[in-house]
Image (tube, rainbow, N blue to C red; front, side, top):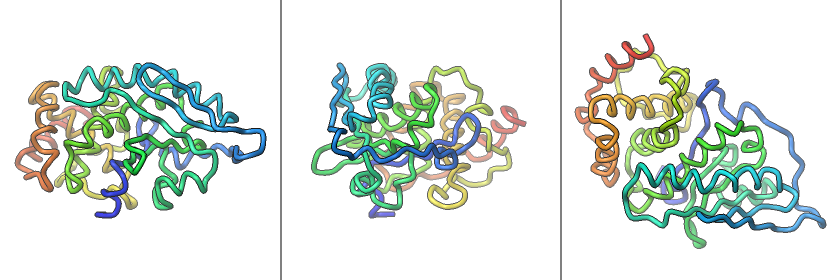
Amino acid sequence: MKHLRTLLAVTVALTFLLGLSVAMRPVELPPTETSHCKEAVLTVASGTVTSSSCDGELAGRVSGLVDESVTGVADILDIGWARRVDVVIPATDSELVSLVGPAFADMAGIAIRDGSGQRVVLNRTRAAALTPLELRVLLRHEITHVATRDLTSDSAPLWLVEGFADWVAFHGLGLSLRQAAPLLRSDVSALPSDFSGAGRDLSYQQAYSIMVYLESRLGERGVVDFFLQHASMSAVDARAVDIAGWREFLRSSIG
């Protein structure tokens, strides 16, 4: 876990909408590292998208969403950050693994910080399978991690870090809690903790639902303040969430 935190700002497995992980919906794409495919960089007002020229369709889709995604995150987070993002779409699996590591190469998108700075790395196979709405959510999720990285402890609870990023990503989409988190059940008894095992998808959705619950209590600004107050901590007392209140909220929201 410590290695994961030092390597990655955060990871995300897309489990929203239909409740299907992108890793379960592969689209077979050939590697684009060939003699006629060259590195291409698309520049927009809020960042860049670097890819193989043979991945131009996906790069174009991503670049078309970067500005609005950065603006969407910035409108919620009134903190000091660059308000830009550099997105990388590796042309081959080996290039992807070299950036994110083998354990996380199946993720649709990962925010990393290395010697080249902070970047969002997209898995071209997974990202190509996304609908426009899903791709927008993915970008906003990862951009939230980029924006808050300097304020977030390497040991901050994943339910806080991931739940907040999803909350920002879904903000303003008009989706119900059930639509955004279809795996949710109301019989919760503890904060989610399995973000790498068999319960990963459910844990992400539970973490998101905690933020929605907090918004019902604290308002939109209150959720941001809650995150900023606790993101630098290595642990958050469960009483700060009120698990009984969260459970009751889920019962009333999803049955």
